[in-house]
Image (cartoon, rainbow, N blue to C red):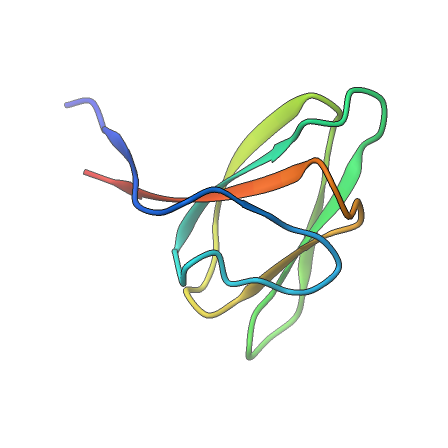
Length: 86
């Protein structure tokens, strides 16, 4: 059975200030910058931070703790949307 991805909130811009992206557990992060990669960091309330590099003009779906903050090394052109699977 195929999974359906649902948008459950508004897309927001992420930057240096941590954002929980509407307390969502699944998020889509998009780097609209066409030349510069961005380091995306997930900072849980308890535990170690995790990071990944998001290449220019790309997006990724990530799972995170609901209360974990997400930051981007780029302060513009990086957005996140809260998602859900059904």
